[in-house]
Image (tube, rainbow, N blue to C red; front, side, top):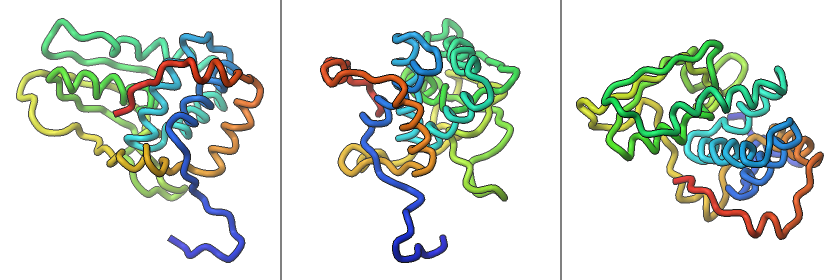
Length: 201
């Protein structure tokens, strides 16, 4: 990492999980999602940003390509929101979908004894154009299995303890872009205070 020059703005800033959830929810409403869908998208993206990184960036990529992709992607991943009746299943997406939309349901399924593997176009890490975080990777398929269900998932999770005490690091430029989009839909503080807290751990 190159040293930062005096007066130069940091590329990463730390934000609270609630801030991520609130902005994604508002921005999703701006992009045409109904309230219940926007809430669930915000929960998925916040979980991914905290646990894996790349949630905000993947959301921005979806709405940049075509606003309709946001709702379509949400609809396509709902198959993972229910507990499978079989011990082994595979799911496929064409075109591929961002990992950020399936990270949360996959971890819920893992708590029920399922292990999971993803078939991705890329792997997280450093690329020629920057750092590719887990939330940004595009997924073709997911394999779920209760057979030999030991060990951790193939995608490593972050230590999220500091996210709730000090905030989670996000790309400053992506954050500013999200803030600008969310500004098109304003929610009162009462609505925010009355909102149920999502589970991100």
